Length: 160
Image (cartoon, rainbow, N blue to C red; front, side, top):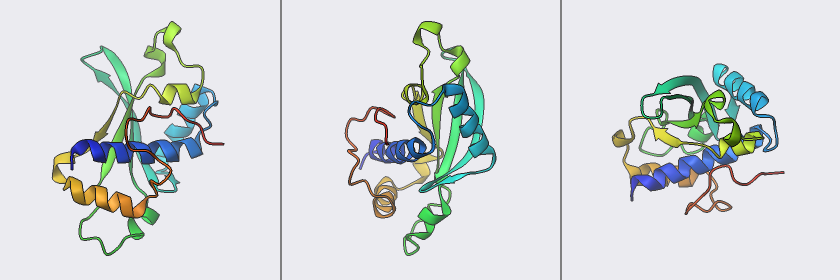
C-alpha cells in the first residue's frame, strides 16, 4: 500500500472530527481561537486529540503557515488493544496558511472555506510506520464507511 493511503485516512479522520468541533459557517477568527484553545488543552474530539498549534515561516512562500498537530485519542487507541503495532506515537499535522497572510481578494469568508485552504498534511516520522499495518489499524478503529478515500476535497462538505 502506498503512503498516500495513510495520508488520505488521516485527512478524512481530521476533516470529520474538526467539522464536528467547528461549524462550517463559523467566523474564521473564532474558529482559530477554538482550535488554539483545543491545542493548548490537548482537547479530545472523538477519534483525535489535539496536541499543539504554532506558526512557522515558510521559506518557499515567504509567508507563515499554521501547524495543527494531532494524535489518536485515548479512546481510539484503547479500542484495539490487541494490535501488534504501537500507534500511540502516530502524529500528524494539518498545515494551513496564516489567515492574515492570505491576500484580501482570496480571504475565506468562513471557517469551512479556510479549512479547505489546507496546504498539506504532514505525518511525523512517516517512514517509521509500516503503511499496511497502520492503515489496517485505522480501518479497525475508525468507520470509513461514509467516507470516500478517493479524490477528496478537504473540508468541502459540512455536517449538520
